[in-house]
Length: 492
Image (cartoon, rainbow, N blue to C red; front, side):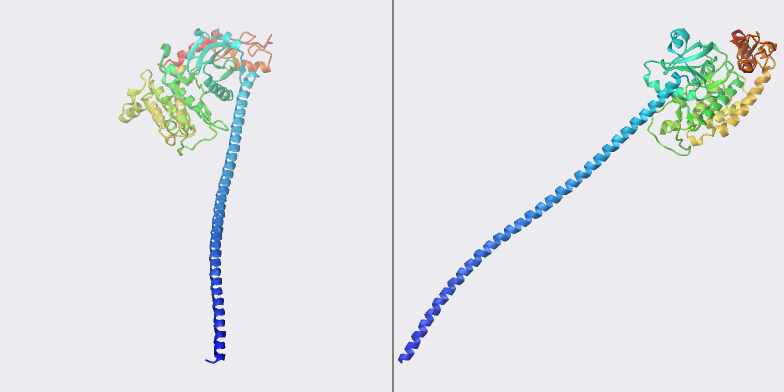
């Protein structure tokens, strides 16, 4: 081989070795680079994982923060609701307290009216009441009930009935105040007249009713004579008039709630008056008769006279009294207790044996008595909507029957001789409350009182009077009363 070729091969070999060295170096660099990449990749993966974990933790924190924020909002909302409820409770309590204060103030006004001389009735002191009743002696007592005791005595030279609230019956104080409130402003010929009161002792002073209660007279307590039919007819009409007056009071009607023969009183002429309105209720909102409304209320009244619809629903209406009135009519016709009376009368009318249930102590006009029985059955309908209207339907019928009874009684009275001195010189009518004037003559109290307000001379002699004082003629009043009783019972 030529020398030039050998040198060229050597150069090539040298170059190849250099290339191999460079290649090895490149391979080492590649391996190093790969290792570096792997290391960096591992580090990046670790960092990525850390970032991911951080992001997850951040997301979790945001979620927890959102939940906490939501809980905070709920807590704030609940706190606001609680605050509003507390404000409402405080307001309602304040409203109730104010209402109680106003109510207490109104009751205080009623008592103050008694204490400071309300002209509708007179205030009596404890000493006056105790003196008149002989220290509330048993001899003066004429009645006893859940409310208290009733005593007959004289105040201001006038016979009165004093109802005394039992000291232990503090729960009845409400009824006492209600009776003062209602009776104090009621004036009607067939409502018991409140003459005065003694609030310190819880006493009410009423006009005295000589013939007691309708219940006593129907069942002839103390061997009293049975009532003749024409007086019974008149009593039914008078009670209806008193009831219509209560239901027609303005602005709100009054429902008696405890109408029964024991609470209907009779004066010396057997004129009836409704009393004991302690359970009476002022109806500021009257539910229509054709509407059923249930109310959570404490029932008040006497069971056999209590409206069935009122017992069932708790809703009170003026027609609730009408049911009791119907039962009272049946008792007046039969002189029986109320238990089972309604069914007995319905059966008697159905089978045609009406006379079997009538009270046999008087001579009834049968057609008119039966008409009363049918009116009573209508009044005792189970639902208020089935009962008639007192003012427009019942009263006209009862008035017609009362006029017929009065005409019969008047005809009977004409057979009795009337002594001349029973007549009032001014009115020319038989006197009810005779009083002696300074001229020695006896006059009807109202007539002579009005005369003396305008004149100072005698109505009879026309001579001057030495004074204007008058005094009751008790002996003449007793004689007139006895004569009226004989005349009234002449047909028995």
